[in-house]
Length: 198
Image 1 (cartoon, one colour):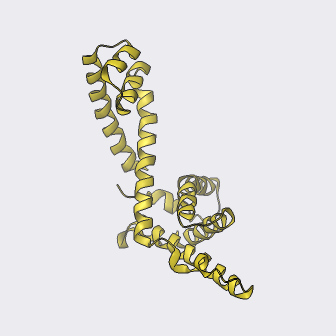
Image 2 (cartoon, rainbow, N blue to C red):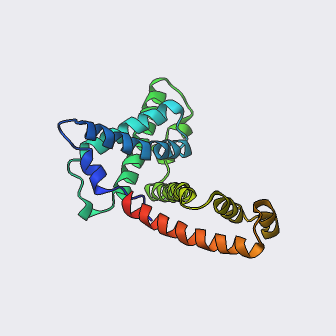
Image 3 (cartoon, helix red, strand yellow):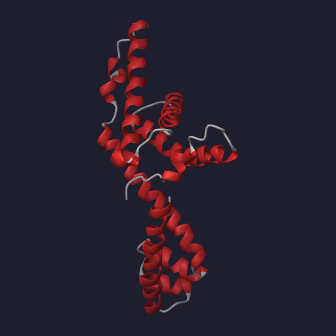
């Protein structure tokens, strides 16, 4: 699954009246992407100040594009990957200019080409998104099954020995396998639903 952003969320970002719903859309968008943008900034060697600058620049680009983004021309994730890459390159260009102005000689740290290529940023986004979906699905599963069933499944996923799981949960080994299979099936359905709705 790609790092999918719903059309309703993007459309909610461009409310000119700046209503409460508009603010909620931006809060949801920031919550969804802030950690990811910081993570990509860290992987690109940006310090905390530069990560904040990256976040602000990306959010500003999203704000400007939210009124005109056309889902028929491509995925939002692809566009966002390019924006993040370009904003990182901009930060390195500024660093390079400052280094030249202050006569610093360590240009290795200031090369725009040091930024991770846009296709790799897309891969990072995809991986982070899959991790997010998995975590959300597990949270949802926990509310849909009995606590001991969830505990057995969690231990099973951690690849603990079946005998140990059975002993810790008070189940038979056969019941552990049954619980694991049922939970895996439910988890798959929850994940599918999350991917559709998020």
